[in-house]
Length: 322
Image 1 (cartoon, rainbow, N blue to C red):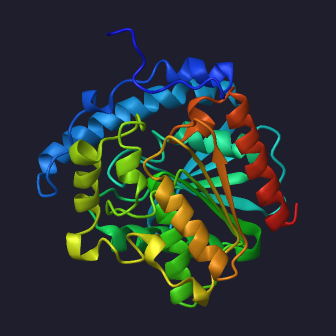
Image 2: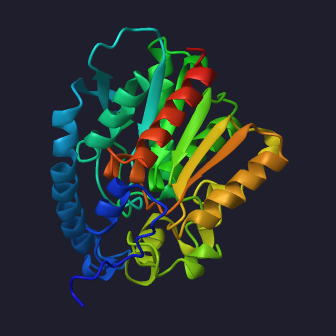
């Protein structure tokens, strides 16, 4: 029946979450993604996503007072976001937005960055990296590293800087940390990865077991094409493309991983957590009953989202010495 919700709505989540879950539609109704080589089709999809992201950001921008200045770090466009009442304490949060590596921009994900700034009280630098397929995974993380290096050249200290990424931006944030480590550039103080896409292959168990529970994207219509646009098949298990395959015995930063139990990406969260934990890296896996991808800002008034944001704030405050 048309009035039936697409996803199961458990009694174990808050009324606010139940109301949001009722609004979710079958992801098969979203546009199918094109082949990696079809640049014109990708441009059309990206234009659609940009408009969609800006529309979804607008209520958050109105709700959470902030200032934003467009700039450039190391030749890479950035948005410098500061929450209302911000006072300079030298601390900052670098943000890498999500969008399956192929959608959105710093502008169309500004609502998410503003929520992060409001949650943490921190200055947020949102990196407007180039999307796939216009660049591949290695060039994308190179851009973020270059922006961070330029930020440091302005006097910012790595010890006063954390990195936050959601969805594919979470995977990108992890790749950036690995690349900085491997190049001997040092690493930021901490990382928060919200619903991170840490394995762009379909290797994880929940890619299958939660296939019909996740209302975000369908692998066979969307994600597989995004992965191919981001990295050639032979490169998809490279740690800079899928950070879950990295060697963490060489070090990593204290990490908070947040996600929901409806996500096909759940296996990636668990595998990444285990890899960091076995390597002796401080890590917390923070999972939420019945929650969907990026729930923290998609349902901002749900108690689950409020709690997750509070935990993010406390985690960053601890590791940034606030």
